[in-house]
Image 1 (tube, rainbow, N blue to C red):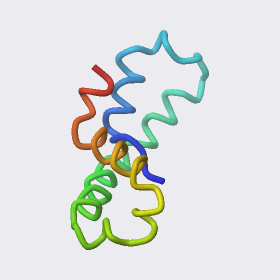
Image 2: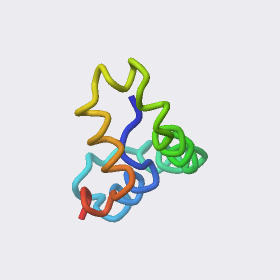
Image 3: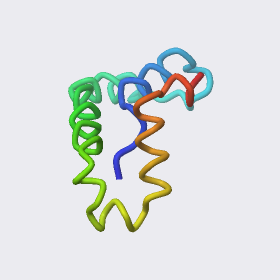
Length: 80
């Protein structure tokens, strides 16, 4: 399952590092994730096609899929 916008997740960790466990690898992990910044756009483009939302993989979990799509389209409403 895809999650909330990766760029917003990375930004949230960078903006509030005190909220996350300090590790030597945290910075390296965030840098590595930057390579996938556009992946969330591709996921949303796929989700926004109504035909794709008719598939069993969507309809079996409509509630969570709808929430995940909404939070990825408006992540500032989730992360504040």
